[in-house]
Image (spheres, helix red, strand yellow):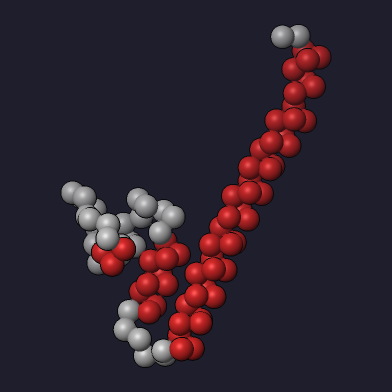
Length: 86
């Protein structure tokens, strides 16, 4: 591939990288907005429901399946050896 053809690909690669980053941010924003709206609605309906905040934290952390600080026991995930549980 000559230098001219390679330099023509640079804008396409930059555009694809920007699109991927934008999509990732949009997905994160949607997940946080959904989890927060669900938490606020459930808190308004039953303010003293046990474990409501913990479920909210778990819902926010659930996309990161390797995170040791998220308690997933109530989501049916079995602990693996070496995984930290609170």
